[in-house]
Image (cartoon, rainbow, N blue to C red; front, side, top):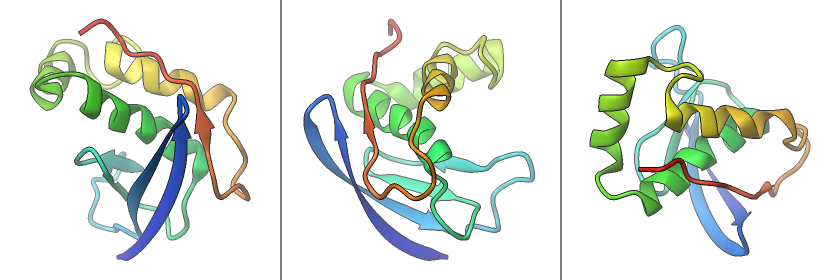
Length: 115
C-alpha cells in the first residue's frame, strides 16, 4: 500500500485528501472506497482520477451530511450500490466529465443528495 496526498478544489474550498493506492485487499468488484472525511483506499497502483472524482463526492458527503455512514449503509441495503442509491448517483454523475489520468489536481462542483 502506498500513500499519496492529493490537493482538491471543491466549490472553492481546498482540501488535502490522503489516497492509499495498491490496496489489493479490497473486494473483487470494489475499485476504491472512502473511509473517512479525508481518506480513500484505491485498488490501482496509481491514482485513477476518474475513480478519485467519484470518491471525492463521498468525501464531500461525509463532511456535509450528519451520520453519513449510517445513512449510506441504510441506502445501500435498500437500493444497492448502483444509481438507484442516491449517494452513488451523485458520485457516478461526476465520472462523465472528469479530468484524465495525467491531471494532479481535480476540480469538481458537487451537489449533495437530499439527506
